[in-house]
Length: 230
Image (cartoon, rainbow, N blue to C red; front, side, top):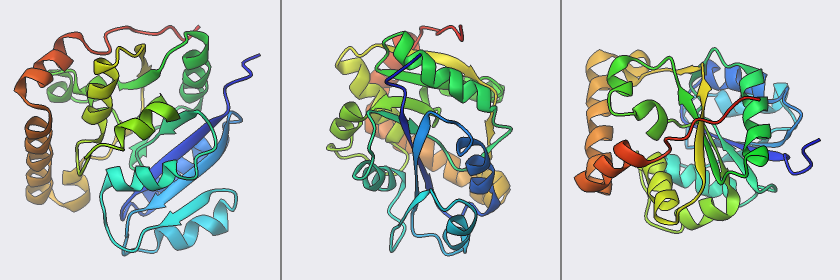
């Protein structure tokens, strides 16, 4: 019924081990995702060695050293075949395949330029400033817009906000849908102290990149439209 729903899924990862396998178990079952690109951002574990054995159709890019999420996505975009790009974090748990299928249908049905999957099970301190929407790593974006976003200087933790700022500036049609999956926080991966330090670095990086005024504007008026599943 939806002829333009073919989608490329880009999954950047760095030392995620089994977590990225959980994501691949789901996205490889979705018929409208006809290209899956995993970008190993210089991992020093054996994750990238295992992927081809279990998911031979997944296109694997291996970067020689850790360059950050933005650089990994840039590399993935170079070989992306479809206009719909589904960005997925590699540390997700409890992924609902049906939610992704409905999101892919919805971006075409509602003529959206971007559809964000809102992390409805995020903790309260993430929802407090709408981080469950604004900083969600799961979103479907048009390739033409992503290419323009990543032609700019985007580094480290700035990816989601850079996309948001571009979409808002150019008055793109953006909506969100509920997303029940949860991500694995850095404190669970690298320990409590180191994890909170990374989270603080992320927050600082985002504020310095966007500026306080733009942060407030994002919180108050960006991506406020809920899109129906139906």
